[in-house]
Image (cartoon, rainbow, N blue to C red; front, side):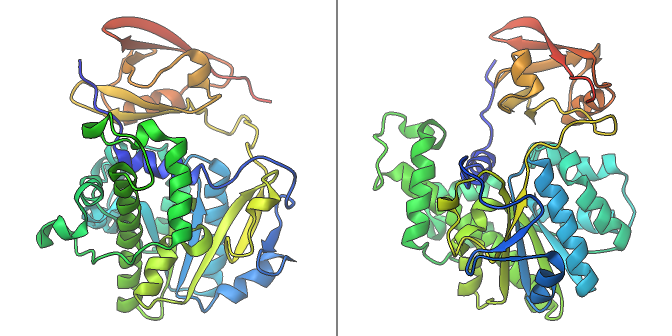
Length: 394
């Protein structure tokens, strides 16, 4: 059985967003805002009015951190209280699903239909419950949602061959990216070196990984094009609706230091951009440069589970021709402790056959805290049963 690897763009998303901060001494307090340029501590009532006249507000995230999405929802609500006409743009959606987003906002789709028709478990694959409060907020308040990503295959093609080599009708109307800054390339090189296996060109597995090598140059082209694609989606909204604020939900790696999307927006003559980041309390102060973002918000990680919180298994899966395949196991998660591995083929859970990502989510969400969930998997041609043990509520 040949199991396809997780699409590289998803791995890039995870690697870039999870390399933004490191552990260390306390840098700020939970629930507090800091303006890095000045060191000023502010509250939201002071900060929000400063953002009211911005054309674009970028809200960074680590994709699988629940607290980051709660913070994003808080910010969307606060910004909308100041400026009624806003749109929420999402990295999670490719442009082809824009009609689905429109139908969702219009109240014409159920949750299940929305996730199926956006190909959520094929395209993005992070737990949709992390994002669902934002989607429901937009729907409840009829706030437009915009798909600002492009197809994974296009990013991969540009990375391999360059923007100019891609036929005009295949570029999804994305123009040539502005050249990345040297600081951004330095940052990408650091990320690249820490994940050499992931970033190696599959067709050049024996190639020595160097800064001038084709594998790293492909990595830079992919990231830069990815930034450009999202920037152009934002710029199009600004052009069509000059009085509307675009609030973008995207990975930290695209936001920090203004290297990514903001840099591409500047080349498109969109300068009214504010960058806001969640910052894990305990991260190194040395990493908190004066230019990292316009403002950062202190977050204490890992909200404890309680009776009202749905359990999380801690895996990413892919729907393939072979079945439902594990493409990532989150460190220290229930799945990791149970012995799940990447490339495990998931067959059934608690007797329920698993054909789609939604099947697994439904089973896990029915699982009470404090119970055990038997999951049958196929690994290396052999079937085995793993037991996922959900902790009791605290």
